[in-house]
Image (tube, rainbow over all chains, first blue to last red; front, side, top):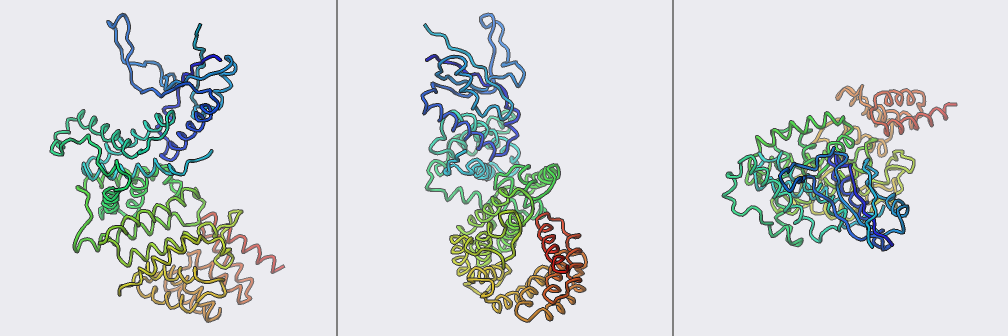
Length: 113
Length: 417
């Protein structure tokens, strides 16, 4: 088994506009999906990220407000999963509720020796 | 998707609960900020709880996040000094931490009900603001349920919110002589709220049913307060329970409206019927008589009847007579005639209907023509009945009602062939 990192991007602008009921339903979809992964032993770790941050460059001589990417490119959270290979990790990601609101997932292998 | 029932409507209800609590604490002027803070807290909760699980006490968590967010905002505006006197405002109130002692929360929500029904606002504004602030519905959901344009609802709520911020001040339950008048307004708003949910329109059915449940929930807050627990309130609660019992039975599987006569009575919700009976018994104590008690009484006789034919129509008619005296109007009069028809025959009903027509100017009332058609049909005046139905269809602006009328017309025309 290899570990893979999911980087979740986008969808935030839409979430703001959801009704309370829809917010809750969306949250429950995520929970259901993640519980499924956990039961199959695929889930390792994961958390959402706050919207604000800093980008530090040149040993701190340049510090800018970040993430300065476009809204849809901001990383909103991460997840680490177990999968056979990259294709397997992509397959697992397909059930993620993020796609409902136009977000995307970057799937990367976490290297280990 | 399987929904965990323990967190059913969690966000919606927490919204109303925390907005009420914070508004009672910081005053009505802060409403805009408070709503923003609570909405932010819910968004954050959605993100975090999606990855983890919902904490054991979500109320306390949401309250803490919303309160902190509000304080941050007030600090930024340098308005916090106004509230320094409140002491350590970042602490979570005890009652939010302990799910058992929800009395204060109920209290704050009761105050909020009175605030949303403040006389500075119009009836429509009171209804929409209640749906927004107390029930946690979004503008889109309110528009879908009331069959209004989203833009119109948004504008009305903005207007109402401004009045709320400027007029309401400190939230409180009125006491002494002031309570009576305000209590009446609150009951009326809850009654209208329920009617909006119960009306057979093509608005979003799920939201509409929720609104009925919300109206009962709000009435429940009044019921818990001994000063607000009047016979009127019990009558209103009974009425809402009896109607709720029939909520699903009145619409057929293919979305058609079913009259009382055609409803499958085994589908009536027994639990709601029992609550209705209990509240009706409480409403009958004392000497006062209100429309709510009488309407509940009528609904109660229907609930008691094993079948349409074996209904105690005489008792219902006498309640309608009383109702017409204390709450006169075309709707009551028309509904009463349906009972007159059953007891005294169609000829009598038709005669009374004609005098009603000029009394209330019912020429453009679809209900009038619909009932007229029914009487004409049972009087074997088929052609006249068809004409009345066509007039009713022309005047109806409600898709489900219209479908119902068209079905009747089709049946009539089949008979005429």
